[in-house]
Image (cartoon, rainbow, N blue to C red; front, top):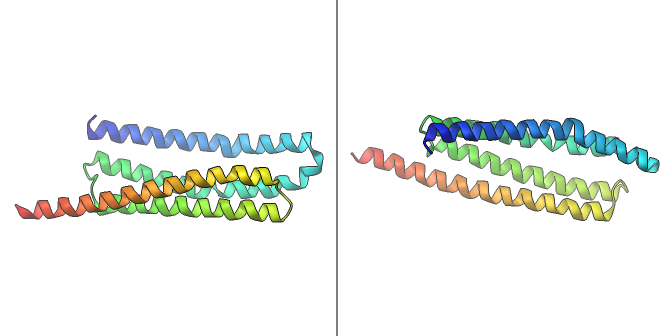
Length: 159
């Protein structure tokens, strides 16, 4: 696959993830929460705090998608191994770490406020684990891209 096709493919994937996120955050999560309040009216006081808590997780996700779009643009412009691309990946790693930490702390705060169930808190740890894995992968890619950018710069100056 050439760089332009890869760039387009990555942008389509980023846009697709943005649309899926929009559907999840604007329709599925609120509808699921409302359904739970109908089934279990005694939990209706927990709907709004959970909706706000979950909605705030979208901020770093969409910021990371914007950075992924910029990375795809760099790839399309044949600037894959640049310090800016490495910086974007590093930011994605930080955003994933921050979102994971927020979700981890928030799950326990909700549990301590008696707005969650221990089973829900344990299940949310799987989401935290996925976020930690994304953090590690993005940090590793950032490191590798940075090293490749330095080598490419040295190679360009050798001639």
